[in-house]
Image (cartoon, rainbow, N blue to C red):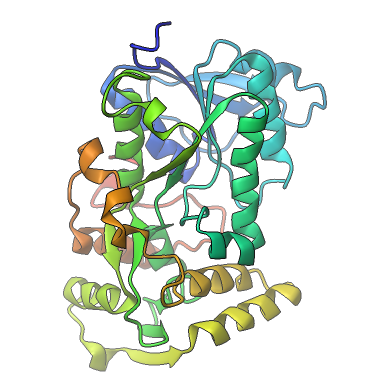
Length: 340
């Protein structure tokens, strides 16, 4: 197909997951793409959106035969993986995609600015995301990495080790003074960005894949501090600072505390360490402060209502959902959370 046309054939790994589900629905909504979900042959839990195709694959096959066959003819592969996925799974998927002739790959990441030199050097998790991008390019395909900051609703609802908030217990831990700004995005905004990226021609237009070839695509919903988040929680919940227990902890101290928890096998030490590092003053989390790199306006993304996003997080918490269980994310306002 000519590069003056948009990409039609899109494959998604993890389409039954949180981010993958948003991506699938947003792409199908445009009516411009044939979207295929790669699913384990032994069955995947979760619901797929109406209109998506499926391809059964065996991710554990060392010869990657089913995976390569499923990816043959696809023009772009979107990879969304659980944090609990095997460390070498993404590499196997990338190799199969390149073998199948997939030209474009968006690796798993959907996170903070992993290309920030200090963040990359100091956090092995971020370094691993960059290595995946480099692997794609080394094998002869093209990558685009979406930098979107931490997911807003997820990070606010998950609990204190993430953004520092225990909504149910009305407790907040401010990192330092709680005034450091970082970029953060909703799932819906990330999905809009992907749909806007893949709708125009592959190259030749102001918005095209070629523009961000082998680089980062920066998008954002909010440039916010923890103080901003708590103020939004007050507006949504009808509370004030007096109704909350607010403590402060130096971000560096908190990061080391999280690292020690990881060494002890405490799972929540991972977000505690990562999030506090991103909230270091001038530590790389405020990519939206560099307005020239954020593509929101170019992609035609709308300004979002922070309080509405906060309300979704509160509804998740009030449903009893936790990030440690197997239950899917609940509906909010009568809609599944992966409904743009």
